[in-house]
Amino acid sequence: MTEIRKHYFLNEYCILASGRAKRPQDFIKDDARSRRPAKDCPFCPGNETMTPPETAVYQLNSGQSWDVRCFENLYPALSPPDGHHEVIVETAKHDASPADFTDVEMELMVDAYQDRFNFYAHKASILYVSLFKNHKREAGASIAHSHTQLIALPLRPSELERERDVIKQLDRCPYCSITKEESGSSRVIFEDQTWIAFAPFYSKTPFEVWVIPKRHINNITCMDSSERTSFSRIFRDLLRSLKVVLDDPPYNYHFLQTIDEDYHLNIRILPKLSIAAGFELNTGIYILTVPPEDAAGFLRGV
Ligand SMILES: [Zn+2]
Ligand SMILES: [Zn+2]
Image 1 (cartoon, rainbow, N blue to C red):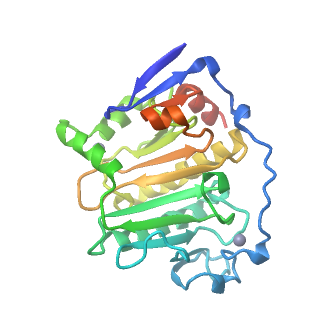
Image 2 (cartoon, rainbow, N blue to C red):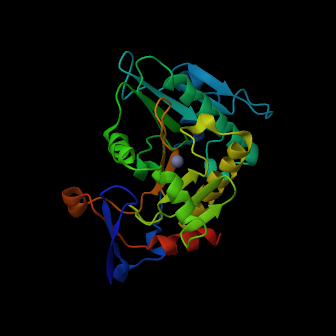
Image 3 (spheres, rainbow, N blue to C red):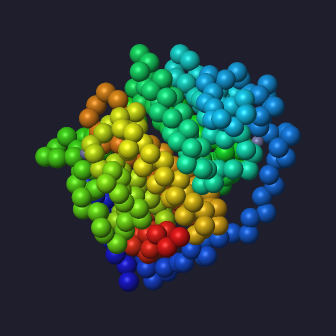
């Protein structure tokens, strides 16, 4: 049995090929990764001179000189005057990742995200700030120590432009509609008064998760304090569920958000479990081997 599924509001499709449906354990690889020892790690405390000087640090009452540390990327994808490329090391602990964070550690990371996004988004020549995390080498992380990246661009990404062209034709915000349509559905993983996290009906990869605030806000700096607390918990718990269900898979997550135009903040988590091959490159259609409804069930069960 196969099923063609359309994106919520774009003319994009995926194919659900449930005949080859997989269970989480089918994705788990024997992972003989060689982690760089902490003493050589440029992101560990004590090795700060191995990176450019910090642009910001954030502290808990941990006695550490920093708990989150930001600096310009040593090998930037973009550098001034074209743009900026910053690294946000979210933890001083070499082997931790956000899935392991305590409530306060997660809130500090979200603080840093808000602050650094805000700092770059308002610069005169900047039209978009890309905030994203690559977890593990298979997902593009070149350094094992957990970190997020921020690239401030002098242009608007075509992905977002494409969405906004469609959204302009609609009577109401599609993301507001999605939060209502998905509320209580079999695809929901976590939901409260302020946020919904679900495996989207149209997914590009098995175990893809979208996290959307129920209130129509443009970016993470617009969260009120209860939205911020709730987001920290839900986001950490999602990453923890993925870690448990898929044995710490590689993943990417990224924020879609704006400051100057009306758009509904949304965050996408994409585990790196399949590779885009010939068919995907030829058609832009993704073949999905785990129904989102099943993925949500596995992640909810943790
Ligand atoms: Zn380290
Ligand atoms: Zn909306």
